[in-house]
Length: 174
Ligand code: AMP
Image 1 (cartoon, rainbow, N blue to C red):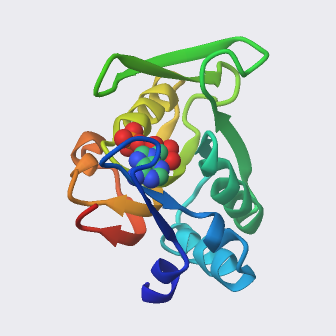
Image 2 (image 1 turned 180 degrees about the horizontal axis):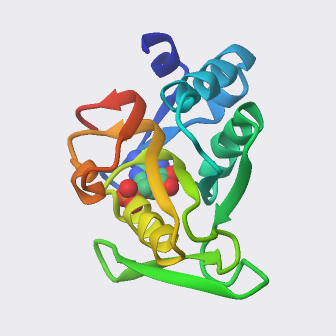
Image 3 (image 1 turned 60 degrees about the vertical axis):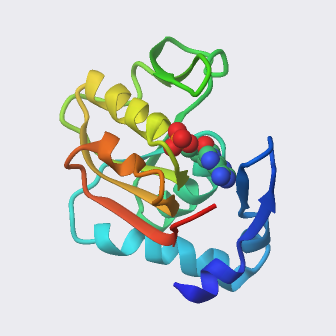
């Protein structure tokens, strides 16, 4: 999807030296690009049974929320620790230095629910893999994971095992 890629801004050395930050705000403000990306993210999953989209804070809320409306299914947020008000389940994951964690409401996913996980970008796969574990802990079945962007040179998809992955824009270098 060449046109979509041209609407994503690469910001070098943000938030720290050596990182090429993929800024999607430039895509979101173009109505055609935003709509095209939401529709294309939904496409491979239109024919399968899904009960809800699980979106990862914070840019996963933007795409996941729009996809849930388009697919007429529910939306469930996964958030950074301490943000969700009711009882939560937590999963930690390793960063370059230290660990981070994500949380989900314990009653958000019921046993056997068919779930699609959504985020804006797949890098190391640590966040998405933690999201998969959270959904599975609650008894949900992860049917797939959709990302606007994949940094394929990092190969984070290996952390997601055999879960079907759908990506619209790929970068093979910073
Ligand atoms: P990871 O857990 O390494 O796959 O990182 C994925 C999360 O970090 C996503 O929620 C992204 O929004 C964010 N992220 C990681 N690397 C970048 C990047 N180069 N540009 C923009 N966002 C990034």
